[in-house]
Image (tube, rainbow, N blue to C red; front, side, top):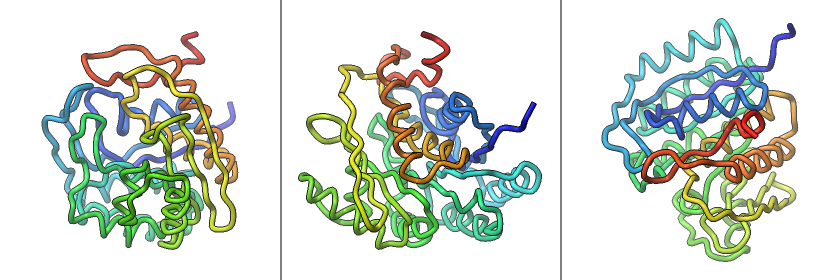
Length: 268
């Protein structure tokens, strides 16, 4: 059997398995990509709250990256929860160390800041490191509206605001950005910008609370597309379609925000 493309996620663990590394690996598998993982933090988390966070020591994070990349490699890479400046510095140093591997340059940065429950997953002091160190390495950055506001310092309420924020994020060094529209009113419209042109991806909204892990799933779906050789814009389009259907076919788990159904194609 021919070896499938592979993608590496560098992110935190969600014990409830709706978000984080668990959601990333489900997404990779559902999209036909072999997933590998580097844990940056362990969270005690369910559909209601994050009750504890333990950051992985940076030497162990570095060792995980070395172990995966030196043996399996990666056709694309995705970062998620990087909760502190030392962790961001460690990850960016490792990515630069392996800059000769194309898959580590096909980098999707999900600037994870707050869990669906409202709990903070990024220390305030680390925002600058995320902006200055990691964003310039990204092929695609995938902020939601609050994350885009934090990165740019803008207040985003109109279509023009979204486009202005997208331009500012690309000006920070990213090759492209998709500002997700889930926090705005009306249809869920994501705005993609690559430094020269805009494209909108729109989907209907569904009356459901089962949206835990949406951001992680979207970013890892983009990475899966890049791993399979899709251009940035097409990878974003594939990710939008995947997340839309995973929400459409979601099911209730727990007492709060349930997860997406990553394997909806198998479970129909």
